[in-house]
Image (cartoon, rainbow over all chains, first blue to last red; front, side, top):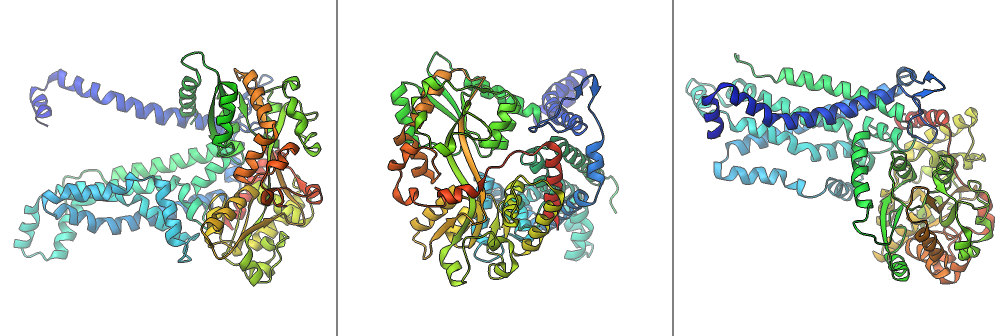
Length: 284
Length: 355
């Protein structure tokens, strides 16, 4: 921290160069490993499925074998759009539940004695120590005898369980930084607990809420293992649909089209989230 | 996706290149399809090492080979995937002079449709897609156990609501429906597909879920009373229930209307470096005592006649694992559909899931 501060004090072109050099590798990494597969998918979505899976040659007998056929197929009826919509609803419900469950906990950790905080945060991330699939199998054992297994409830429960830490951590990081003096001042001015929360804590924590929501919503949208293991006969989500196209149906163009459309939807949402969570100068 | 796969393959390639000249056979095979014991005996005999990689379905294996995975000498695809690899010209013909034990194979496995004359593929193990059930529960309910009607007819399903799982596989579930309706599993007549779809949709509300693997545990625990699945998985559920000393037994049998038979075979990949070791390995497995391992280990059927005396009698005598001749006639192997048909089926499958 001190080093960075001194670098900033030094200022000048050296500092900005260092900053560039340091942030270049991760930027390149993200760019290449996000853009390259996305472009490959985009290309695949215009091609035709190969006889045994994979893709048919893009160019055959001197003619390009590219078309919008797969997109036409996707938009040809409501089935695929319906699964998208359903996935968005499941993701929204999971995000909301995570938020409701995580907020009080994150607040409690942020306001606990400083020496306990690291331990509490450690406890939040402790479940990551065991494999995700093993934890889902544990849910099968928990829900099985209660006759709750293989239902939309089981899917949401599994989703919330797995993604809760991703909501708690950004919320905690945000809440921990709040200046207690603000709340004291409000109290001195006669604001009750609820008003202090509503007028001070909540607005200040909005960036944390948006960050947590994005971290939960987006992975849930693409999740296929949980609906497959915990869901019933009707709990198909877009992740399952995409996986099916690449494996069982071996229809890569359709899988690619679904992936591209999902990516676009996620980018739109991430954009909205970033915009909504942008730091604001004036607060009400 | 591709890039990631390429990288994975690069890594794999690096692993597949031996650091020093050592005799290594590279085998790409199903999960737990070869016992440690069998491998060790072969390694001792050939003074070489067997390096195994695993897959859990044919599509995964085909996808990986399609993406350019190299270095494997032997793969163990199911019939339709043998056909796929053959049509892609990815296979090396067998040198039968190096396979004296080939004579051990049963006559009914010597002329597979996907490989006339057995020029490329040596059958290793078989499974049947059938019904596994909690024998006590079904007896209490007075239900039959030998018909697909159990998973399709509401009059039976009413007693089993929420206690039934079917495979999460378009081909397998459609095949079961087709067999129940008296058609071939290769049926592509749209009117008959529609008939099968209506049958499935009518039964779906009674099913607990589509499951490809969890049914093993669910049957063994008693959560599920009836499951559509593979004979080798049912065998495992049966053994698990026995070991856990459950008050019920898991049994399985081939429905009288017929079912899907899967034959998995060893094939040599053209890209393999050690066809010599691959032939030695196949011939080693073709020996009766070694061939019996796969039946004794995972309850798979066996195309090897010389293996029969070495297979535990309760396995050799189980008609769900070793279909008697009458059953065998009613079994059909799946053949791959062309891309257009696959897309129509997948669209119908999605509709089944959503409704």
